[in-house]
Image (cartoon, protein in one colour):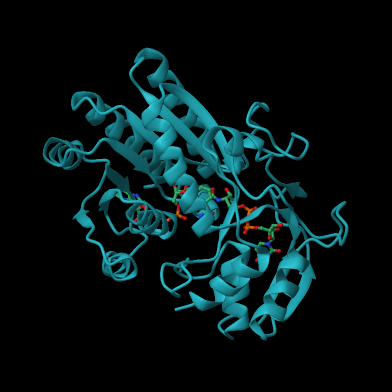
Length: 330
Ligand code: NAD
Ligand code: WQD
């Protein structure tokens, strides 16, 4: 099947491109390179030994998307393109709402014009907010998001539900990712944030590499076994394979399904640090500091639905995640 990946040169999109190509699909990427590099296209080709088409373009521009959908025979869209830095979204909320929601609406309108009905959306566990008990199931009420980025995901989910309710031909899979980490085992296609990382794993990598002096562990007094925050870290290659399964489900059904993609297990900040040190034979200096505003104590997925609906489950261990994150340090 020919699949259009928006944001496909980004971290999760590029790893998904590899998984789709390896599963025999054809991949076309559109990306404006706002947070990625065109070199990634070559990396995908080298890893898979297969061709991938790339269009440099902004998905908020209808003419860009119309031209692609008119000429490329895409049967499905996997929509990764978005701005994703939580802190930046608080400083530039309008840029986040404009890019993430305008991009989505532009895609959906163009798809409607061209009779394309299969859509997979990158949502986030952040939509659960902090009020629900773990493990988080897809039918739990969405929470109050702590930042504009999170709200763009919640609003996007609502837009997609309304669009599908109005068009019975549409098939939408809302994938709620937990905490993606790791990178392709080749050492390519890792997460390379610009500037100071917001997320834990890239910060650990940069601290181990000597780029950052010390990691701040945000809070040592949570009601968790070691007092530090617990998350459901999931290897990006597992996540990528989850998209292949979601695509197969999407084209065979109609309507909307929401699916958690995680391992179903929680690990603490200290567990991640110590596993990283052991697996890679490096040291990660850290100090425990105050909690970070907006953080929840614990967050992990119920993954029963992903197994039942998509036949997918994460296979890679926390050790694999730590090893591949380090390999992909660039
Ligand atoms: P990323 O920043 O690496 O990839 C996003 C890609 O979209 C980038 O290559 C960027 O250049 C592109 N892009 C952004 N706006 C665009 C536009 N207007 N037109 C064309 N391209 C545009 O991020 P990622 O980590 O790969 O995340 C992919 C998706 O998954 C995003 O929607 C993100 O919100 C979501 N998500 C990510 C995480 C995470 O922790 N990484 C967790 C949950 C959900
Ligand atoms: C993980 C744990 C921190 C950095 C975020 C977004 C979410 C989703 C995934 C996109 C927490 C602790 C972190 C540090 C630390 N992204 N930490 N020191 O907050 O679970 O989720 O990324 O959709 O929307 O909010 O991930 O990696 O920032 O934090 O101690 O320097 O690591 O407190 O317990 P989070 P994270």
